[in-house]
Length: 334
Ligand SMILES: *[C@@H]1O[C@H](CO)[C@@H](O)[C@H](O)[C@H]1NC(C)=O
Ligand SMILES: *[C@@H]1O[C@H](CO)[C@@H](O)[C@H](O)[C@H]1NC(C)=O
Image (cartoon, rainbow, N blue to C red; front, side, top):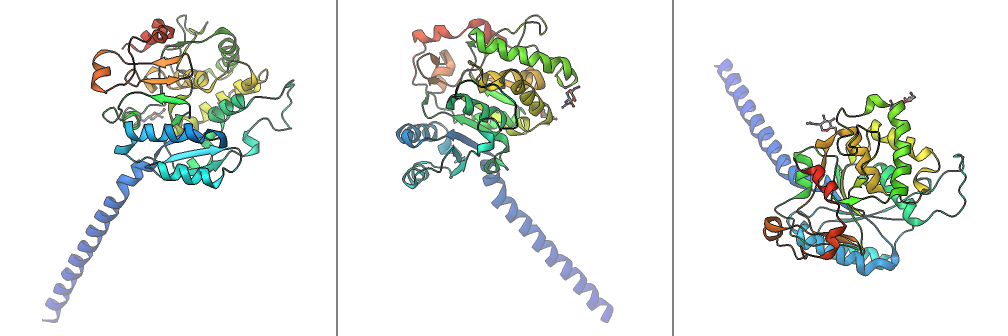
């Protein structure tokens, strides 16, 4: 009789234990997956006190065209703390959480221990390109983030991207870098960066992807085809940016002949070369279905079905599309 009591007690305990673990794991599952996915992706923007209007416009536009379906956070970086009126306004207008970070001195410019001959002050544009390429991925604010979408306050997006889900596409296809194709580089900056890349290729050839030259060169790496993605937009895998290969490529090119202070070096030029070289063509994606505009000559508008299907508000016959080089776009015809 006593034994039967123990057996009942045993099974009751087991049953209660099952209920408890079952329900608690379901709860954590429900609570965690969605926000987790959301916060592993985020928009990054460099902020300036005098660009509030443009920043608000960019946030509202991306919220309307994409983020209303996701609420991905905005990570907003600046050199100095922003006025509280600005952080307040940006937090108010963005659907996703807005978080603010300062770029530290040691990631801005060169430390005094680095021997360099730098004749004139380095422009903010150059320092910012260098920060995005070499230091953004290690900022503590982005510690738990996997993918970032780089947004410039003065860029404009023209198509609905909800169906396209650019962040989802990155993850599903395990991509390192995605952007808008078509720019043929003007020679000076591209050639000097390519020169610096050559010494990395010679020393660290084992880090290169077997098809690493496919998107970059038509003669197996002898010369650069001068194709790169457009400036001021890019979705990047921070895992890729944190990888050993990427880091050593960045340090290697930045160490020769004043690196990122050279005219014409941009982060998108570097991202194009680095992701192709180290990850191969399948780690890079060209968004042809995103309408994008930045400054006078940076313009892309999808045509035909993509234009209609994504409700694009740009002009697919705009004369500036002539600036897109067909041979660069054709690289992604697979
Ligand atoms: C994703 O890509 C990285 C390199 O960029 C690679 O190390 C990793 O194995 C890939 N993961 C999968 C699931 O293919
Ligand atoms: C690149 O090559 C140099 C020189 O051979 C070597 O010291 C360095 O460890 C290599 N870097 C990586 C990441 O393998």
